[in-house]
Image (cartoon, rainbow, N blue to C red; front, side, top):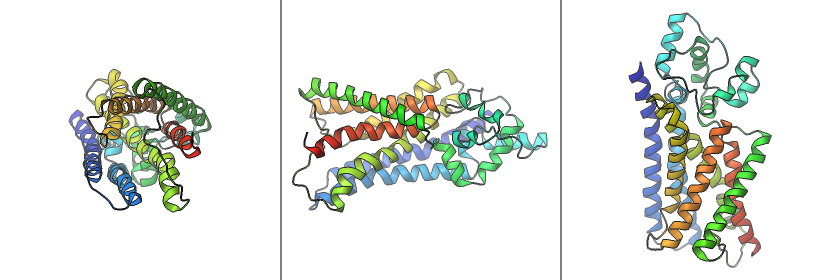
Length: 319
């Protein structure tokens, strides 16, 4: 049984790692290519990151819809769960599945709601512990609904309290980043957000607001805090190190997030490498910790929007 769980967890991480590597390679290639149109270059730069990450999310989500990979992120693999259900002669019993998102739990019975606090990114049960029948039955439910399964995989939900947490974490992280910029540059920088003669067209709307403030935070949080964080968490748990699953998952999520933002920076520019690297690492760790604590990524998305917006908006206003 244990071997099945480990194999499925590794499979979940395969599209994650592949998507990250492809994004880095494409981004580096685009950065080293000269384009006649700056707008096109900017668009391609974003697409080089977003497309591989979204494809990785889609592949992992497809695994959830088939009842395979997603369950390995939340405990014993689907094969084990289905086997237990067949042995017990129970089908579709209970609604407290570890694959059920916090939003769907809130609409379920009180027993399911009581288990949310233990589902930060999956149960801390030992991987070889036999699952109960309620969990086994609900795997079948999620396996037949790709949208619900994908939402469960990424913990894609947001509650009013996430706005508070997200704004607080984003503001605190940006304050720390500004202090790092003062130490590294001698003043608060704009992290590359500079705007010349303003032409208020579709390109401006995309490059100045939609991409950096809304789209990039959403896609990156889906990947780094939705997929990377949970995939690493469950892999470490299935290896029998549940106590260290949280710290390791937060660390990997933060480090890979920082690495992605260092790809296009000239390694010879030491001060920029240090400032951007440390700033994005701190934010990545903070966002991952928030996602881990709340069991969903809504707060992390709000934090990311806040973190980026506090740079872009002042630059647009000429501060």
